[in-house]
Image 1 (cartoon, rainbow, N blue to C red):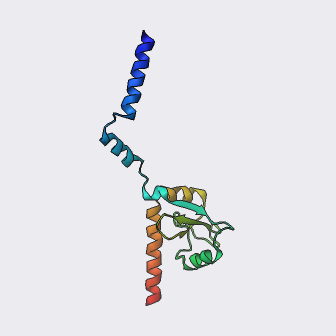
Image 2 (cartoon, rainbow, N blue to C red):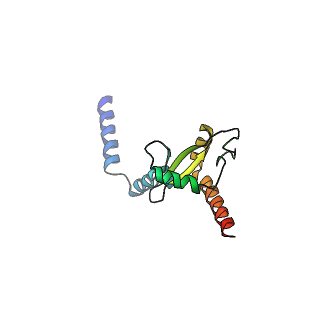
Image 3 (tube, one colour):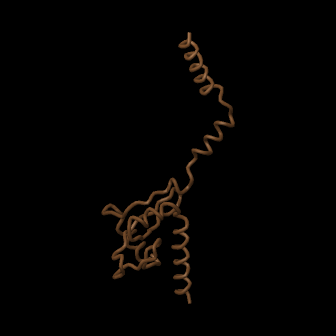
Length: 132
């Protein structure tokens, strides 16, 4: 008898979830599951497969000689050479991002827009100084 009630309850629950769930619940689930723009983005380490011409141009135009996260200087500074990454977002141009270590990579991934704005500001300052 207990088994019959359990089976009936289970079937009723399945039927409710598959057929009778309210529309607002589905919409709320969709909003919750919808990825944010930075969740769709990828941080890809530069490799031998990277377009060499694009990389050379991106490195030449990169406005900083320090890690975007820590601020530590590259080239002779305590962090040595930069680790180059491509930040790729759907619908936007690829971006070169240079960091010094794994800890900075982790921090960048937490708030990429913060660091991309810093790169944009440095590029604007560089362009402004070249214009004068």
